Image (cartoon, rainbow, N blue to C red; front, side, top):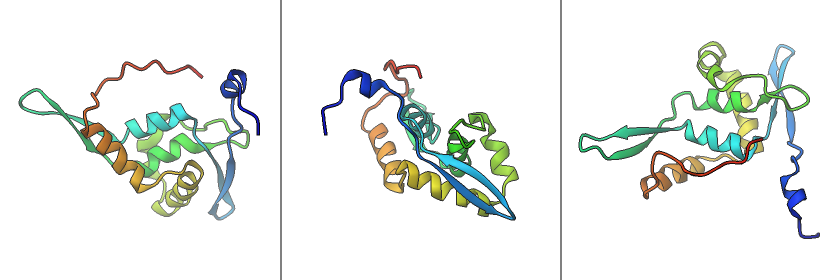
Length: 140
């Protein structure tokens, strides 16, 4: 296998898409996330807390975890997202837990998301990363 060149690395990957049967003939497609989408998803699971002394600390915030993951991965048959990040609250309140779990199981598998990933994220934040980022992400 040859060493990838810059052009190869910057070319859009083909994201895996999988059909998820929700029962009663209903289905959705779920896909892999891009690196940027994964970063934003992980950031949505962290709550920054300002302490009385002015310092900041970080807490894992798993509220609506499933819905947040679902809105980042539910797509049409071509891989285009169907939902916006802000749709997670409505999705969480309106979809049954059983259907949401079917979507999340596939999304976690396709995106290699484990509980250990969440724990690592919180641990890394506690080890000195600040609440603001100065990194420049490439626009997609």
